[in-house]
Image (cartoon, rainbow over all chains, first blue to last red; front, side, top):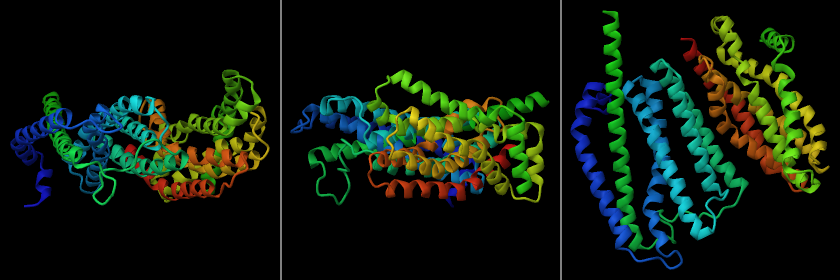
Length: 242
Length: 218
């Protein structure tokens, strides 16, 4: 029993089919609980007023935007090394979700930044690197759509994902060098002294869990769709030959 | 390898089209920007480093699709792929040829355009140095983008979408060198980082490009 068994599309479909309703339910519970707790049962912060509550969307979305790219990097490597189709398809499935999370992070940040910093957008390192990340997502998705043969597309996008990861990482540090920012530093790390206080921390934790589960749900769902689409095109091709 | 380099250079110069177009584009950018932002010398001096770097980058981008597309269409890329020379070497030579034809003229022309944009005197040397160090990276990264999209019918626009984000670190450090140089500040750090990016890209990216070409030739 190893994880590679799920590289078999049939096994993957079976297991993910059983898993999917549970993950969906868990995601829903976490999101509803976390967001309700965060929005309605936490006090307004000192300097932020009620705008602090957008943190429950902003931070988890931003975290997942980066994690989604990491997941694509891992699955791309698996595809290049072991040629498991499910792996490539899950990377393809994750990209639009990652892009959406990136955009949620940017938009909620702009909405938060307007009252707090007095501007919708600033060329701050974090903001800029997120914008760049969204460009990488766009390029990746566009390449998937442009190449017709699925195996070629999977290979090319995997190579792009690996090279893109290196350059996205470089860009992150380049913009840090290029401009000093308005954005506050990390406030959730385990060892930092200046974390957000517990009142906000617990609902935020639940929201992050909810976003992770939401991501898993969507990736499973979209990967299943991709597998079905692949089966359908195989059937159609067979029919044309017959 | 040298034969391939000479062949590519000859093709670029004699076949027309690519050679010189990038340079003309670079010139046009430097002419059009003052028309757009107004002729105040102080403003131009401030934005000159950035404009020159962005212009060089776009001029580079313009000629990328010629690196592999023509050879792919007439089948000589298949021959090169089956030749005893490793494909990584082919990619490296082709990037070098692209740099000699596009990047090097840009480097040499940049100071002249610096005059048009009222670049402060202290900036000229650093403009030359940063472009000379940075444009090889642009060529190598660009040939990776060209390798990814070589099999596509209309790859040009997609290639810009893929390549421009990859250009960002080079652009940031390159423009930073000129900006600091023009203000008389120390340029060591961005210059070292720019050189690092170029060295890393030249050393590693041909492998990725060769992998992409192998996939596209399959």
